[in-house]
Image (cartoon, rainbow, N blue to C red; front, side, top):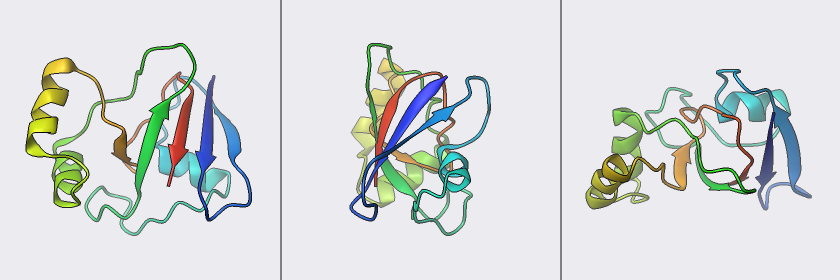
Amino acid sequence: MANITFSSPAMKKDVTVYAVAGDRSTLLALAQEHKIPIHFECQDGECGSCTVQVTPIGNKPPMAVHLTEKEKSVLQLAGKLSKKQCEQIEITDIAPMWRLACQYIVRDEDVLVEF
């Protein structure tokens, strides 16, 4: 199981929820299930309104699913990632801290999600 801690000025306090390993739900779906107020519009990775900062916590190495081409484009247009950073991500195989909650698949890792 993964511990996902949501943190935002829009909430009274941080909330930690448990995600079942192997479940293919997105971070946004998990947030909605637990009534976490992550803003979203399209839920399809096209608008960028659900951009969140994801930081691995604990001692496991990051395991997040890599960025889709759509997610790379949206994050670049939003100024969260540069073209060079996207190229570096592909080389190093390490996911960046800025993600779209509707595209991020929750894995068996503990993360802090700030929005």
